[in-house]
Image (cartoon, rainbow over the protein chains, first blue to last red):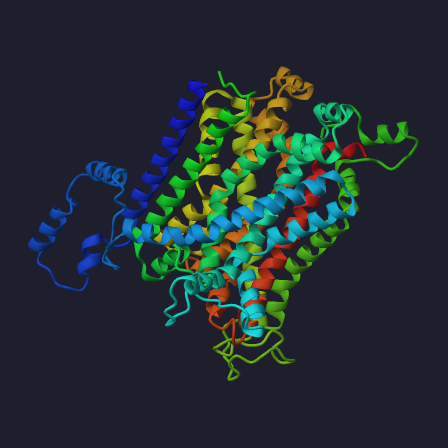
Amino acid sequence: MYRYVAARVGQSLILILAVVTLSFVFIRLAPGDPVTYLYGTQHLSAEVLKSIKHEWGLDQPLWTQYVAYVDNLRRGNLGYSQINRQPVGDMLWAIIPNTLLLMAPSILIAAALGIMLGVAASRRVNGWSDYGVAAFSLVGYSTPPFWLGIIFIVIFASRLRWLPTQGMYTLGASHVGVASVVDLLKHMVLPTAVLTWWYLAAFTRLTRASMLEESGKPYLMTARMKGVREGRVFYRHALRNAAKPVLTMLGLQLGTMLAGAVMTEVVFAWPGMGRLLFTAIIQHDYPVVLGVFILVGVAVVVTNLAVDLLYVVFDPRIRYA
Amino acid sequence: MREGALSWPRVRRATGGAKPSTPAARFWRVFRRNRFAAVSLWVLAATSVLGPLVVRVLVLDPDAISPDELAPPSAKHWMGSDYLGRDVFARVLHGVNTSLLVGAAVAVTATAIGLVLGTLAGYRGGWIDHVIMRVADALLIIPTFFLVLSIAFVFGGTLTSVIVLLGVTLWPPIARIVRAEVLTLKEEAFVLSARALGVSDTNLMFKEILPNTLPPGIAMIALLASAAILTEASLSFLGVGDPNVVSLGQMLTNGLEYATTAWWVPAFPGAAIFLLVLLLNVLGDGLNVALSPRMWGR
């Protein structure tokens, strides 16, 4: 077991290093070197240019620069955005809570509903409920989040005028206390609904497939023969085992889920990572775009590692020698 | 699948002239049973052929500017016009053509890479297998979307580069399936006998084994295309697509600010992406079922 854990941790470190190395390569190959980028149109003498380059370590060999880059990242320094005159790390830390504020409720609602729908569908394979659920998840899975967002804006905000569509708080309104929370919740409804819709389809599909895989196994028959109620057979016995592949897939899908959140944020002008990324792309702010890449990459690798290690703890059958 | 010594005339004689059952016929029989998948296939095929044709024949210029800015859908502009007076229908049609091109090109590239690498890994084993599969694992975990986004952003995303990038990052699922298939195939009698006859390794791999891994490989092709179309749309939505090509994602971003005033500007390109992805996913499910060996006995 310890060998397995050590191997998985080692693998994850290699993957993180791969992400970091890629981003280093990208930033080195990005058009224009940082000096001309920063001082662009100013005519600087060769002497001054040289001293600036020296100050930033750009005259060092690539290898030294790479080591410095990795060392900076290790200390949580994600680089500096010349365009926004701010460290990239600060910019990211400031907006990550906003992204999580959208993603966390969406994932929770989608997981609870999706597991229920998936189990319901798997109980009557090829019945009408199965077809209904399959149709829903197929449609949901195929809906681009940005388009659904626009549809919601048109229907709920533009036609019905029920909900706000842009940002986190009403501009100019200085709500305090409860009023400000209500304002925030109102702004959250539409983007959360879009994300939930999209995640729900994935959860449902995965749960159904995973439950079908379990449904033929003998332990379910044993449970039935012991007189366990049918609902309990599905929700307790089968679901417990079906949950594992669902979790694994979700770990692997985290990147896609983050991509969905990015799109949704752009549509609703939600001040999160997506909005930051979108603005950075328009401004050609390379350190910010690559900072997002590093952050997402590391988050996904670490989540997958955590999911795998959780199995070791919770599944008594796993004793990786 | 190989039929060994049972050639068709012989089978037909043995079965008393009953309908021959070639792999293609069996596939078609199962595939057709899923009406939705069959309809999706026809619609997609028709769109792929008619889309470019209509654009050429009617000379639909996506960039033609007319004085009616932000005109709602009418007989003249079926899907309305945008803020420059450009016909949304003409642009959507061009965008659909682009999306289908991306989907097809990426699916073919990724499948080809997956087939070759999967066969190589499964047949050779050893360090080649190890290296290929570790790269596949890495690509499965590292978030593809953000990787492709970063590369396209840094190096400028032309349509070709986006297609290549997606092809190069989406092959791992195919390679995994193919590799597993090859591991069982390489012990089969026809491979062993071919080897006994002195067939070279390269020929064994690519002429004997690889064709037999096609069904599970092809089963993924529609799903790959749908993933590629959605990713390309997302990339151009975020502004890292090819600015010189009419793309549905780009139309959506540009139309975003008109969502409340001129809904048709963003709604139709979005609907087009949705329909393309939905049709491909339905088709993909159908292909998966029809190409799974489990279904062939039925």
